[in-house]
Amino acid sequence: AQKVTQAQTEISVVEKEDVTLDCVYETRDTTYYLFWYKQPPSGELVFLIRRNSFDEQNEISGRYSWNFQKSTSSFNFTITASQVVDSAVYFCALGFTGGGNKLTFGTGTQLKVEL
Amino acid sequence: DTAVSQTPKYLVTQMGNDKSIKCEQNLGHDTMYWYKQDSKKFLKIMFSYNNKELIINETVPNRFSPKSPDKAHLNLHINSLELGDSAVYFCASSQAGGPHTQYFGPGTRLTVL
Image (cartoon, rainbow over all chains, first blue to last red; front, side):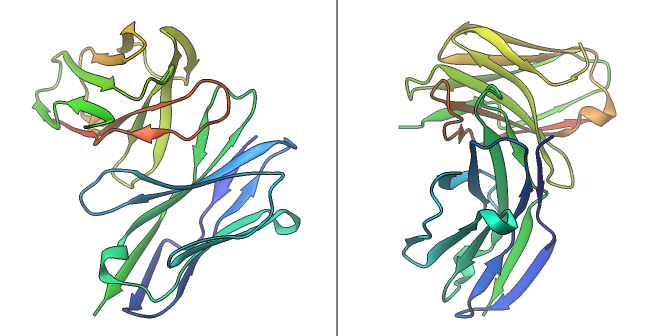
């Protein structure tokens, strides 16, 4: 069975702080994919990153970075120098080949960035 | 150009009514989905269609019936609406196979009174 755990329900930080959102997954598949999506207060779901299970290289995109560690089944997301516009709910998701493209989402982490 | 669009954005209706939500994508994708997001923000897949063929049907009440007239459209019809159907419904699309990145529509907030 596929499972994604985002243990942090809500995080509050002050602007310019760095913040890490945790994502732990469970799967028996050897080939799988991990995703992060952002849901700002306006409600849409915005794709941030897709990573396959064979690529453990960390990725950086501007202020965003992702740390994928198969040994701990984690795919954590760090925002450096957070800004108010980063305030959103962030979802981690897991998919696997043969699953008909089904994504299993975590319960999301609400990030609030205050001035 | 909107990649995945849904109409309507808001839908308020009475219990027992029948309603439809429409979804269209212009990304050239073969696979489309419906997700339900409940009041606690939990996202769960309902259906997946690949090139008009039903691929995933996740224990959804049969009051919910998806219809895909072509691979660019996936509509959701809901019969005999219940209070518990109140939620935000998201349509998404992706390339076939994968799992590839799913691109989501803006969502339809359904409120059943």
